[in-house]
Structures are given as C-alpha cells and as structure tokens.
Length: 272
Image (cartoon, rainbow, N blue to C red; front, side):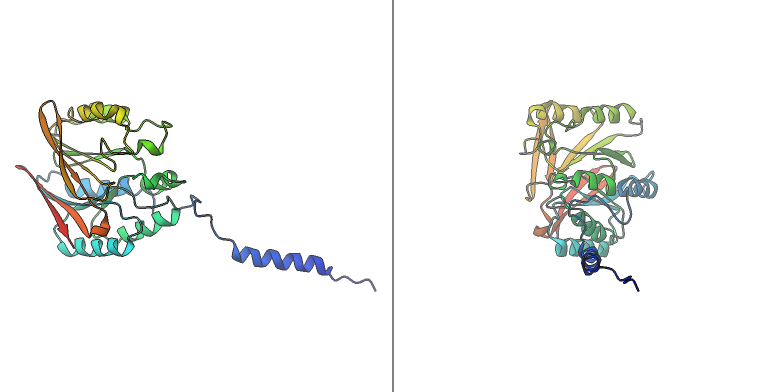
C-alpha cells in the first residue's frame, strides 16, 4: 500500500509557517489606524454647535505630549475636573518618532476628555509616516473653525520636515480663509506648532507670514508650542504689537487657559 503521509520536510515547513504567523508584528510605521478617524472635523462640529452665538467661552491649550503619557492623563483629569472649559487645542507633537501606535495611544488618552478637542500637527508628528497617520486620524493639516465672532486659523508650520514638497506655511490656504470669512467674524487667532523664527519654520517668508496674519480681522494673538518652554512674546507688524503665547511641553505639568468675552481675553498658565 502506498504511503500517503506528507514528507517530514513539508510538515516542518507548515509548522514554521504557523509559528511565524503568530509572531508577525505590525511594522511601527504601518499607517493602519484603528478606531475613530477624522476627529478634527467631528470635534469642530461639536465646538461650533455648542458655542454658536456665544460671546464668552474658555479654551485650554496643551502641547508636546510625546512620551509623557502619565502627565497627559493627569492633564485630562485636571481639565475634566474644572467643568468650565469649553474645548481644548493640542498644539502639536503627540508623537515622538511619528509611530502609528504613538498617535493611537495619545488619541485614546485625549478621548477621555469631557470636552471636544482639535489637534495641530507638530514637527515630530511628521517623522516617518506620521504625516499620513495624522491626516488619517485628524484630517487636513491646515484648517479653521469659528467660535462666536472669533476665527481660529490652525496651520502646519513645520517647513523643515517637508523639504519644499508642500507649501509650508500654505499662503493659498490663508488666502482662501481670508476670502471666505463671513462678515460676522470680528476677531482672529492663529495657532501653529512652530513659531516664525523657530528652527523648523521657513524663515525666508517669516515677515510675509506675519504680515499676512495681520490682514485677518481683529487679530488677537498667536499660540504655538515646539520649544517646550512657557513664554509670552510679541510680534510687531505695521507698528502694532501682537502677543505670542508658547505652551510648554506637558512634562512641565502646565496648560494654558484662555477666557474670551466681548471685551477681549485673559490668559493664564495653570499648573496641575
């Protein structure tokens, strides 16, 4: 009778394949994203819906949370405990190496906020395939939203990471924003990760960028992160001084709090 059993070499090959399948790990720069996506657009709908017609509101800013997951969790708990903050802005660098898991871990922590949040892309977020992962989770890297009579213009300013493959900062985006602004917008705020003059900004266009921002109605101030320090500076354009608030990295256990009303705004650095 003919032996129907498989040769031992074939059996060994099947065993190795079975074992290796259990050992396969997703590549750290794989762009496969699990969970909710396009978060900025979804949260902007919540923010604009909740605060439509409001003249007074509060928003918090955190930045550069890469690696500091415990501190970010503590910040989320501290902000949730206040019950007076309407939304939060993350000023960039959720990831340190642009890894997909870094974005997902941070997204899950920020998802525990009781309030909506929007995220700006940072220079570390751009590393590897991070740009693609950021877009998958949060959406476009240049966007805007409106609260009351104030327009928030959020921009990608990490020019060094793009090597001129894209316009950074994108003046076409700014031009479209300016053209499409409704007459109800009386005040403007610019948010970015890297400030003009910083090491990753395209400083060939620094003065042009600063001037272009002043064309927006009632420019109030700029917010950014990147250098991990808490600073309050000024940009002078057309003889007018505009305040620039730099949010420290979350390791400093500090977030910025802005209170806006019909008379202007107040700023506070809050330790937690």
